[in-house]
Image (cartoon, rainbow, N blue to C red):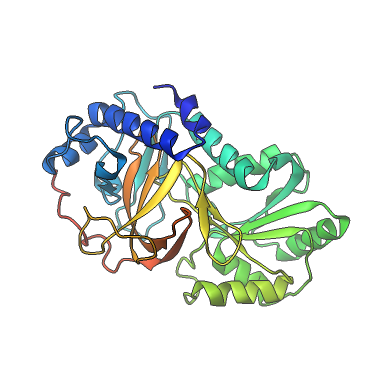
Length: 325
């Protein structure tokens, strides 16, 4: 398949046409996904619309090698997890596709990365190997070309000094951080920023009490003097991201889409505005699986935007019992 066509998608009809092509390609070349579809009685012969394509439960990334190729992967991304816990593994055949996806997605929402200074506060991700988020942010830092761009871990004094000086100079800044690290800064310092985007990636990683989005964003807005807090939504199993520019409402690039399924029926579809499980189509996942049923709860609106409202309870055992495939 011509991967470049995926990043040229502009309309809903183009997306649907490409999604069916990707489904056929992955059905033919991804053993795990083909077995899953066959178990459901689905195949190329009876899938004629995007709405009929089965979504692979994300748990398969913990127990199977979900890969659409016979070639060895160039890189393997791993999710975080406690000792002894199975983690998701994303076998990536062509890292350059991931790079193209996150760069074009960033440009779609924020413009040229070279116009920004990128400051990263991601300590928990830095403590382990195989983080797709660290891979992306490191590349964004390099491509920003600003000498002050970089990872700021324990030296929060240096981070705050850099942030204040850059913001006062009028340069555009993105401070991307895991929620608990941003809170650590926000609770001990305050400033009025005018040229800075604060972008949280979610997660307390067991370091602090979990907060609802409004409470978290309220603390960050008050401390940094901002009207809105941005958010990044991505995961180990994807090669694309969604972004929110405020109020927790996310939007996707044209090669990614989100739908909602009923919480107790993995093969169903919920109407706009209803809360349920988040299903994602990520066409950049061409050599993995582009059709994933996540364990996140959310709702989708008519314009394609969506909210993330939490996670399933007992996510490793909920849904359909097809893990023995």
